[in-house]
Amino acid sequence: MAKKPIRIGLIGYGFMGRAHSNAYLKVGRFFDLPYECVLQAVCARDEAKVRDFAQRWGYASVETDWRKLVQRDDIDLVDICVPNHLHAEIAVAAARAGKMILCEKPLAMNAAEGRKMVAAVEKAGVPNMVWYNYRRVPAVTLAKQLVDEGRLGRIFHYRAKFLQDWTINPDLPQGGTALWRLDVKAAGSGVTGDLLAHCIDTALWINGRIEKVCAMTETFIKERKHVVTGKVEKVGIDDACAFLARFENGSLATFESTRYARGHKALYTFEINGEHASLFWDLHDLHRLQYFDHRDPSLVRGWRSIHVSDSDQPYMKHWWVPGLQIGYEHSFVHQVADFLKGLETGQPARPTFRDALETQLVCDAVLKSARTGRWEKVGTAR
Ligand code: SOE
Image (cartoon, rainbow, N blue to C red; front, side):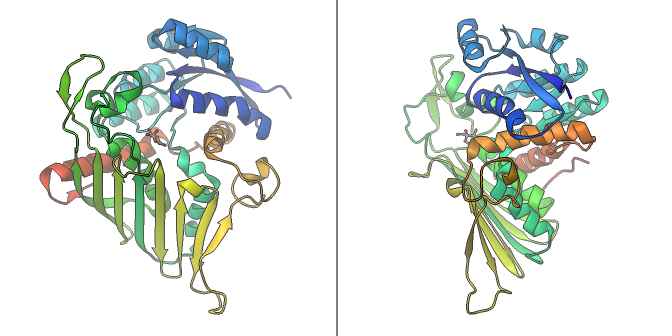
């Protein structure tokens, strides 16, 4: 049977533009779906560079103005891969134009913007999703499955961290194409929106709602040259953030993120301790899930390192044979596959914009608590 084309309009072609394009190209080869992703257009301001990108990845056309792209009749889905301060305006315009929308994380600069985006997609009734890709690393999906099956019993603790070390150099400027993550006007926040947002998304998904948080942040390098203005400017982002949280289910949590942990490049880890069992996952060893079950006979009781590559384990039947692992890029392929499956079944793939607003609300409460020095309640998205 002929597959229905989904004509993609990608806005932005950085690291995420590549990750998403790769996913669109691969998904139909590994997953049986009634849709086919068509790389219809890519948009960015630099015409020469966007043409190069289009040629390398196989996009049929280019645009240099996102407003034109979202109005095109031959685009079904708009994929937003630009810095955070542009997410809301593009998403609202794309929703009004009736496009499906995939948006890079975090959803927005803050929850107020996020609410407008949720209202726009829900009013337009367009399918929408945010690229919190780590949910779809098979070992993370398996962690969720084990918790949902009740294997851990009552959850006592959730512990997550995301450590990097790429901004320690004080000569690193802020702003511009590659370094917008350091510019608060483009990013909204530092590690809270960029890295902790991933940890929060996974945590809410696996362990439910967070009621309140108590946070501290620090900006270690107070001034940096701005690439666009050429002036030395105040740094407005949080370089590091740590917070305590209470989940609605009664469990206690600690979250930590920094770009100043020398030696760590992208060390995202989480551990969950329950009444019967615990689990631990580490992005640097992403195909393994560590699991300890106290109900095992004491002679053989201990942490097992589950190599998540068996065809019974999440997503793995679509790839190679048991024992052969997959990696980071595949989490994006899985996300597109689930999105397309959602179109087929009418059960939207998650996180939707509304789900991602929950994460945004936690980020807002974390940043507020860091300012006030008090515990802050997390607002509700529903
Ligand atoms: C930052 O370095 C970054 O690329 C984040 O923006 C991504 O979301 C994260 O997955 C890896 O680190």
